[in-house]
Structure formats: structure tokens, C-alpha cells
Length: 418
Figure 1: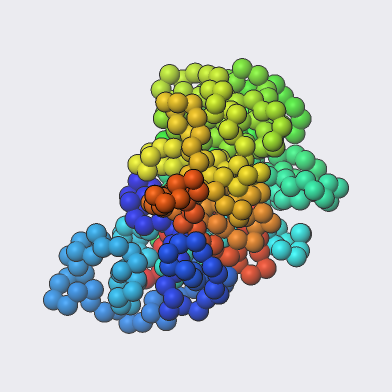
Figure 2: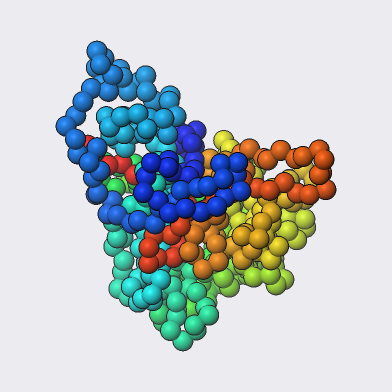
């Protein structure tokens, strides 16, 4: 993931030469091209299936690859077919893509699916279906029409990890987490080690220094030991030595009432116990000291929506979207205050968020699209109108046709067969 984070982010508008639908954005480019197609991950473009050609005439391919690897992925993709093929091989430094957990727009019983948005090809590619248990996780309960059941997922160490979910009977759906590694020659799902104590749901889950972090939650019934427990796991560790490592227990079991984002910044994992705008309680785990702390009052007061943290090499900053006011804010540890990064009507009611590569990817209400905010290059403020907040550089990526986005993550692109 560290190598991937240096490549351009997943969510730039695709080039206008592709077949697209048009949408208006607030950037200086005026119009943005977006795709709604969903294809199998094994799909091969005509250029991917073409006979192999030398990457650079007169050079062996392994030397040519060393020359091409520092170039921007968008440039490589636009030049020729051999370079496009090279970009999707396991040995080439990957660019970032947007990964989404999807729900069927019309059939609530269709189950969940997963797809990755390729920003250079401008299309969605379907991930292979994970080996779901029986009964499978549910996103909607038939007796509670307005209540969505969370299927919690985490991006850590360049992998997508399904941590917990609920069955129709409101029991934990996953006895073991499921892991998808997009960088393998044949990307597929694998079973992770069991989380200590018992399967759980409605927990705090996130990534911390490349490890999956889980705390709190509830099993088939409420158990204080489970509600106070926590553990971390390294998905990049060899399977022979891969196991969950327990952390000191929480002070109480308050993190077992709802799914919560656990975000890491400054060597500390931060989380609040409720996603609603009601009274919340926060907790902070100091990774270096190995102890729980109270959340700073300013951080807790400004935590008013979905949260995400940028990778350490991109600022290590916590971002929150204020669902009511449509403001994307960043937390400053030194002042214990939130600073507004972008503000837009389109951010109101934000459902989920991921941050990487200088972009904040926000799921719009209803999941029909993902709003991408450029947070790496803040817009210039006009000296003549300083009283007005600058318009954010923002564009949209439409969900695949017939689907709605439930959760998003940013990870390295999937490899393709050569």
C-alpha cells in the first residue's frame, strides 16, 4: 500500500475518448466523464488480448519496465497497448482504484457484490464473489424497513477485509473475516484467522498502521467480555504466523450498539460509539503506549458523520463529513479543532467515506454515486471575495447500473491476466 499511495489516486475523471455519460463538476475542466458499466474482473480489452509487442524497441522488457515505472499511470495508459498491458501486471507499481461494496437497486434479496472502479479505463470491474456462509449477511432486515444492517469492511495493507455482518436473525454472519488481495496474479477471497473470543457484529473496525483493528461488538447475545475486547491483525503476514493479537480491554461495553469507524492518526486509533447525531461517547487507543484514553472534547464535538483517515504518507489526518451541513472537515491535534476543507450541498447526507491519494471519496445519499473531493490541492481564494468559501474541486463517479454503493475503500488496482 505504501508503494501504491505514491501513484495518482483512483478517482480522477477518465479520459474523454471513452464511452461515457456526462456530469457537471466544479473544477476548472467544466465537464467530467463517468462510467456506469460493470464488467467481470476477467474481462479482457482488445488491447489486452493483442499479440505482445516490445515495451521499448531495442530494450529487453525488464529494462524497459524500469524506465517506464516512474511515469504517471495516465500517461502510460494513453500511449500504447503494450504499456497498458504492463500497468496491470503484478510486477508493475499499481495505481489506486476505488473499491465498493454494492447492493442491488431493485432486488433486496440479491445479496451483496463487490466492484472496483478503474479510473484510467473509466469503468467498473466486478470482483469475484466472496465465499459467503449460510445464512449470508443481510443488508436490510425485512421487519425493519428503515434499518440497514452494517456489513463492516476495512482496507488494510493493500487488502480488502470483510470483518463482520449480521444475519436475518440478528446473529453474527461471519465466523471468520474474509480477505481480498487485488495484487495477486489471480485475485480471490481467502479466509482470515478467527477473531478472539467469538464472532461479533456492531463493532468498531478500521485500519491502524497496516493492521486490521477491531474493538467492542456483540455476539449472538450480549457478553461484556466481548463488548470490551479488542484485537489487531496483520493481513500481510505469512499465513503460518498470522493471528490476531489482543489489546487491553475497553473500559466498558459501550462500543456494541452500532457499527463504528476506527480511524488512525498520529499513532492513535479514534472512534465514536454512534453514527447518529445524538449524544456520543468517544475513545482513543494509543498504539505506542498500549492504553485507552478519553477522546479530546473538540474531536468528539465535531464528529458529526462518516469518518476516514488519510494514510501516514499523505498527512495522517482524520476527516469527517458533517452530514447536516455538507462540510468536509479535517482535525487538528494541536488545537483540538476541525477545519473546513470543502463545503457543498452535494455532501449533505453523506453515508460513507474513504480517503487516500489526496482524494476524499464520499458516498452520496442513496448510493447512486460517489463524490470525489480533491483535498490535495485546495482551490485558490479570490482576494476580491474572501468572505465566500472557495468552491471545492469535486466530481462524481456513478454507481454501476442497477447497483447502489454501500461502502467504499481505496486500494491498489487489480491485476489482470497477461
